[in-house]
Image 1 (cartoon, helix red, strand yellow):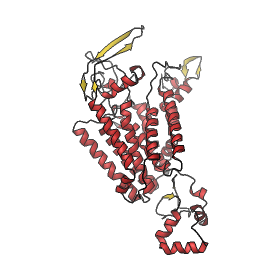
Image 2 (image 1 turned 180 degrees about the vertical axis):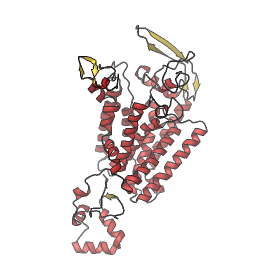
Image 3 (image 1 turned 180 degrees about the horizontal axis):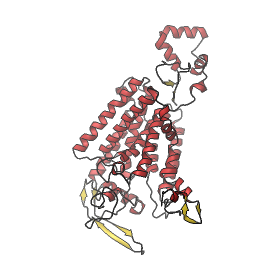
Image 4 (image 1 turned 120 degrees about the vertical axis):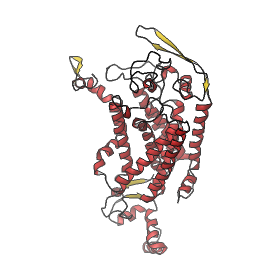
Length: 465
């Protein structure tokens, strides 16, 4: 595996001291000797030790720096900061999105700042995989470990977002398996992680990378997989026929109200008649979908749009129908986002100079953004709920630019102290998501009350009351 760390100017770095980011790998010391002193220096070193070049651990030790101290922190700091910023943005959206439409999810077409949170996480997962699987000695063992990790993440997501916990307004728990929500944020990340990891472990060539073109050639199979997934998504989204469908809403008196939605169309991307929702209803079952669809805040479904509100008098029949924003078909493009992040991770692995890395990030990011706006202009609108191709391009492009900017500030210019909070949040992203975003911590605190459940600390400070 590649080892990456931020080396301070402590006299232990072998690389150019103007470079903060040092890549330690086998043969690194020998390569540096060849670059600085040519083949004569290498031969002199071989003759002086009477044999082959010693391993990098020995050379680093000779410079007065032990291998353990040189690799104390094998993390890319800018990646932790990026992840921490995403966690902070997620908390902001969850807590303040209901009061400010600009930081709440778009009701349907269009994007807001909230719509970048999920793609940021997927992109970061991809970048991390590029570093994790830099070298794989046993592909079967690596695949087995990736499958096990994905299953653990999927199970945690099923527990947290399947309806087992009833929120901070209700201290009860438990879920009817006939109505458990099957997909969710962590489940989507688990699926994208698994497929991207399998691609990285099994699908790469032995091409020597010395340019952007050779980088694409080395990982051409991964790029082909991404293109195949995109083509499959487009074929299903615009090619499947969506028939009329029915659903029912349970009422408080134990009865149910039935609704019928008229469709009979093909290639429609409206809230009611898109192929994304139809596939989820057919495969997962409508009872296993998210019960509070984002299109409930559209003008057709809320008199307070873009906020949630009462239904208008002429509201269409689909306004209260379940719809999962992390459904099956839209997850295909989520995998593509993860694969794009994986290619950005390859840049870190194969390019050692800051200028080269930033250039190799800026070019594809700009192309993705240009493609996104062109697609949106010609009718393929940016839509998070459907995870359209234009939405994939714009979020991946912004992710790439943001990674380049954070890398420049943190890893190149060394503005790390001001980012300590974000770095810490990035290192503990999953724990923060589980405790805060999934309301586990508020539920735990609210579980301790005085005499009556309403006499608890959260209600006292105005949370969850």
